[in-house]
Length: 383
Image (cartoon, rainbow, N blue to C red; front, side, top):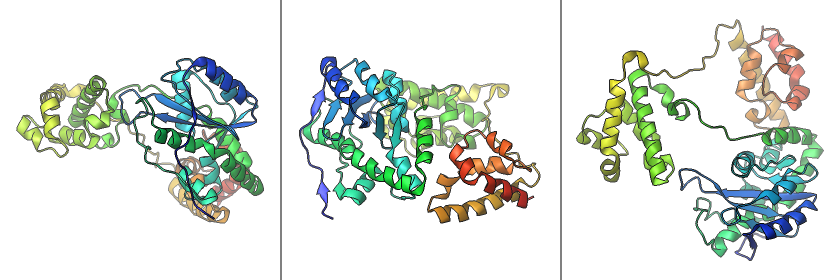
């Protein structure tokens, strides 16, 4: 099979609602369409959708939401249950469409989920297109700032390539899923993805900070002050928080608790620019955390596993051994077949039944139908 490199080409960019309405009418006549989004999360504090790529079997469009402020015509075809919307790794795009424009997708086929249900280990879009069609995608603009205008011809070609071959890929994956009797799995997962929404953060920022759980008391209080400071600076600078100061640097500051600029300069990751711009504010945040009364110190809300359930550990070992055998037989990754949280929930029940499986939040119907009885029998044997 010859290798095809996607080259820069021409593609219509939609910048006004009149033309968008015309394109939306074309889309409303389709049986299936391919969709992808480009965002600017790596470059700005408040991320936004900067480009929407849409392809049919024969045409491609780039919809510019920064120029075309009214995207309501697009809601019709994307939300029409009679039109299949094909996307790759759709979860965050579904959330973003709803957050920024109130647009919902109701009939989804996610090619990444499909690939994983087929046991394909390299399930990225570039890997799939290369393996299936010999197409090599140029990922040069993967981390580009898509909020900048004008878009270059090369950036447009990059964007179009994410949807222009998605429908032929869908054709193949759908057929293979059907042959393996797994198409119903995919459709159930996709119905759940369509319900995904962006949730506003509530409570202290350390709840959303990776690694914060290892800090306690005073150090956790200081970390929260530092995270609040970073968030404010991120807004002022219009930069993502991680580009202002890294989480690792903030955690080290919270543990070492520097009192002077010289102390702060010894912290790994603190650059001269950061010291100059944020040094005094960092020291003030440390001091504020240090002055917090002992009774007001925060505690990380750990979710502790109930290890006192009789036989739970033994049952979990049996369930994982069963999963290894079952996933190998089906050619699937163990976590795709049955994630750990699900097996842990099953293991907590000494006398598993169909009713107890139905009570496990998040367990899919396809999983219950495929191996529900296996789980019940494995638990019974592991008593």
